[in-house]
Length: 287
Ligand code: 13P
Ligand code: ZN
Image 1 (cartoon, rainbow, N blue to C red):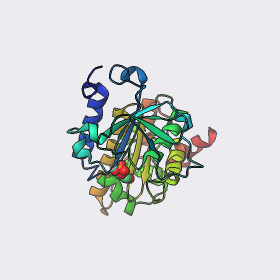
Image 2 (cartoon, helix red, strand yellow; image 1 turned 45 degrees about the vertical axis):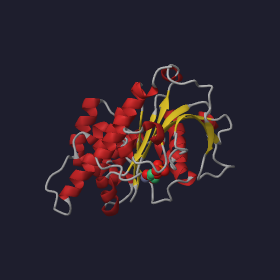
Image 3 (cartoon, rainbow, N blue to C red; image 1 turned 90 degrees about the horizontal axis):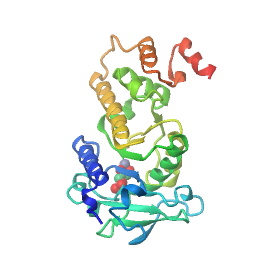
Image 4 (cartoon, rainbow, N blue to C red; image 1 turned 60 degrees about the vertical axis):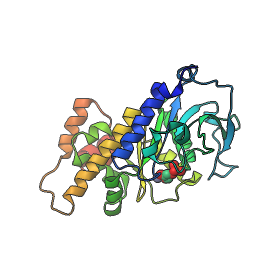
């Protein structure tokens, strides 16, 4: 067997967590990431018949939470209580590779969490989000949660309806509507670490790759690490522009006509119902 620490997926994942920490998105143990791995990419590194231990899901209602649609799927995931700044220095203790058991109620540890640790407390939200994203995009592999300062700050002083929140982000930087034409889903504040917030997040994940948890952070999803990271990075950049502007009057902005030009140039399908002008809103009604 080859050394798993040399695998491209562990290296890329470590670089990701280091970058997230460096950007200030993951103070202390804040944030968590899960990455759906392919058996082909694992077979040279791990004996997939060897289960180290079984880890039951926590924070879920045992009767209602069911991960059987993901049975047999293998995830590289961050550990609960682990600091992102330490992941790259010590992947074996801070990360784990787990396979969802056939009963959909627990996961089989195949590698990592060597100090007896377990996966993130947000595992239910991650698994439900994977199920939701896979149902609309079979290529989705990453779910990522973090606490970026500017999106958090914006959640205190901007209305939390997803149409106006998304519209403001689209206005704050030209590339936003190109990167997330579907906008950003917004939840109310909810207790984290439970299957209730997991269900609510997953319901939004059917329509959005970005879901805001007000006063807490954001979820991003994508077919690879770059897509999920790039989504959060772009939204966070726009939120930072919003916060730099603060309460100063906006004298000019990106108009909906400008956005429509971008949409046409990049051949996108945005949430027309998030637009304000009737000529654009009516495009949503036609669908
Ligand atoms: P974990 O340490 O359990 O991953 O929790 C961090 C977090 O961000 C909770 O929302
Ligand atoms: Zn969090």
